[in-house]
Length: 222
View 1 (cartoon, helix red, strand yellow):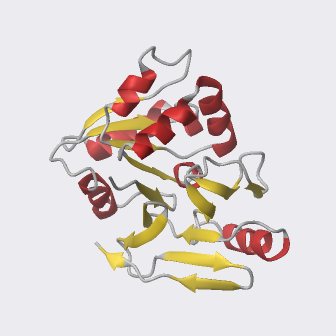
View 2 (view 1 turned 60 degrees about the vertical axis):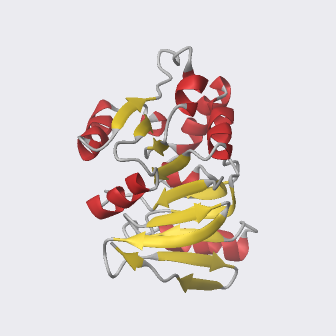
View 3 (view 1 turned 90 degrees about the vertical axis):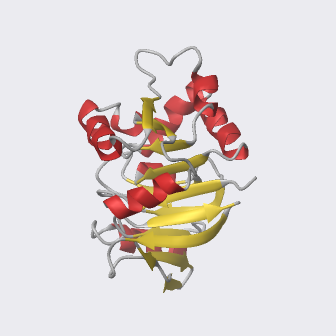
């Protein structure tokens, strides 16, 4: 069974990219679990995502305030697709680990449930990533879930400080090499390896970043 992660580079997810994500579930009306932990379960963010999927999926949410549902593991494993929203990556990971939800996600991944997300929902699947979780200054976070080896950087073309910080971390601070993505660009990983880059903008793509080098990756326009 293929293990798939669709990591999106932040910003608004264009409808064609969203359609591609839904198609990965392989069902006409997939069960989609929204995980808005990184935004402190912001109702406005959740409503925007609900509106985006309206009529195309059966949506539910994984929430942790005031506490998670008793059947959280069972509910998580009953999904076709799990979508993680943006926000504070470090806080999100800490909350997940306190409640054992990180283990639920790993189990879902092993069972072939598609994992996805944007910004914080991109970073979390990797070993490491570039984050503003600790304040306005960007730093390297090194304790992601590790389902994909290496590091990740979202917002590569819409936040001016992301690219130089990611390059500096990799070039000068022994940060693991990895992948960056422009806003709204999706990187599909199958069994831990990059399979395809999906974009709705001709000028936007993903990148492989290693010490001393950066390679723009060919992307499929949808």
